[in-house]
Image 1 (spheres, rainbow over the protein chains, first blue to last red):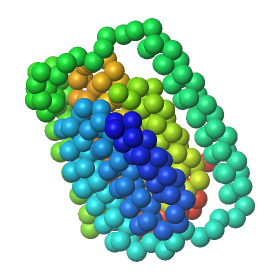
Image 2 (image 1 turned 90 degrees about the vertical axis):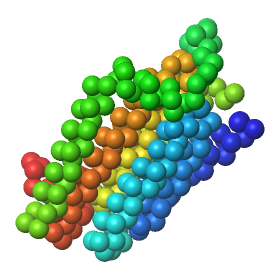
Image 3 (image 1 turned 180 degrees about the vertical axis):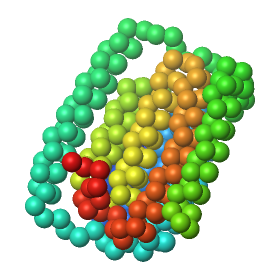
Length: 168
Length: 100
């Protein structure tokens, strides 16, 4: 069952991420990205991170993508026109870089598999709920980063208002 | 149980698609969305390894990454908005003032 869900979600995620970079209309790209985010949330549930799955749907698929769609529709973008001249070079560069990255990642995945086959600490039995475990860690060990994050959010709010304000 | 290496390979594939998107697209907003995709691929890797090691720390890091991504999206979209107001375009080939 878990295996089936993993393959289903993984294949959907990869197909829709490809569609995201292929579609010419930015609105279609944004909607494809929403699908990718939702499948990732399902994968998080499979991995036992229920809290983050909920946050993924609420924050990413909800808030951030609504912001993207809002800006796209506000600007009323026309579809991307076919590029000439430089596009060949860009395509060539991106295919080389993409192939290289993929090879590197797949090799590292293989190395990880070999290393982990030797045996590491197995997954600990979860005696408390996932949300509780995350919260306990967040408010004890990572309390300072958590507080700093709030300052970051404040700075982001002020920055966004200043940049997008009337005189911006 | 799905082995961790499969999750890592899936994360790698998604990250690579994001990188290719940054290279081939010319629309600033779509490039920005590709960056979000790359962030999510990294999040998947973090959570997979968090399960593999039996520690919850990786999930806390993903929480922070999501917060930073939200802040980044707000500021980045504000920059894109003011860029469009000034230049009437979002094509990154035409916005090359800082390029020498």
